[in-house]
Image (cartoon, rainbow, N blue to C red; front, side, top):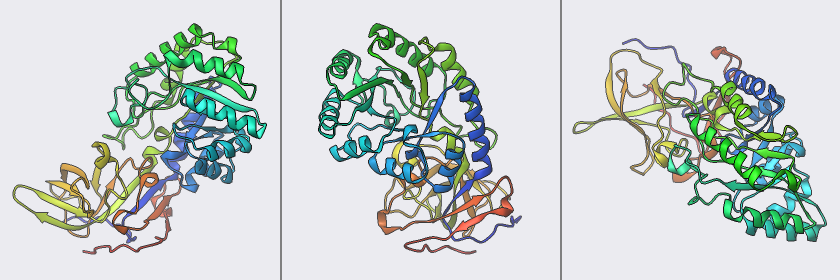
Length: 400
């Protein structure tokens, strides 16, 4: 059977295409800068140092959801004035350290949190820059687990309590109100939710006279999706259309700065998970391809049924239907069911696409699996791949 010449590298490993990352960041930068918009990269998507270096060099800031992320961004060379700190459950210590670090703002998720921030700021005698995250009760038309803008979700201040929050900002001298924040969900694949967000933001801004409260900025969050089904032909999202929509649909004073928190759309397609076939198990009506990567390296399919393109990069002969599963002791440890692949055998390499966001950053040590290695593709040349050795527990890699 035809066999591709594949270099022998310990598997599984994350593969990052830095050339594609650079192209993606360049298009995102040109699309946003055309309108003077500001991008804060959602660090939770991927915190690989090489990726963060490219993001910093592109001139983007950072969106953080923990104190560790704030400190990681600062250590990575990002200016405090470009860092925003979100999250529904900031601890007192996190709030205190964030205020002392001089970051751009804290995105406040509740009136209760606002009260705590005010008390801590008063104790520290530090003016707290705050942006109020509003829950507009809008459907994102995406998976329930990554929908964040409905009234039943834990995120944001209900519109019914926004006036209360604004009054508290006005009456608390240690709170510096900067503006509003919205984020309705992730992996949004149509314009309609974003148009609805613009309409809601316009209405709320004018109904509550947000400019009259001294606001200087609005943060529209992120949520722009990527093409998981056809990543090869659609590797970069439509940043131009995304930013143009907000430019055209937002009806706010011109001096109000516009901010966005993009994560998946910037890094999702630049990463892949490469894994080796351990066994091809023939059962009653099923063929299971058992690989050496598992939900410990890519949890999205197990967590909410996410679909990733899977390719056999070793053989190209024939076609067969398989379930591609991992070695973890959970039935949910499955990357795809009824996947058409070439005839697949022990030792073949499979490439799982679109793993540049929420794969490595969500990896875990369940079953004491340990960490895995990384390969960086420089520019567009696969021959210039650089291997980062595995650390921790070493993996068994089957050979054919």
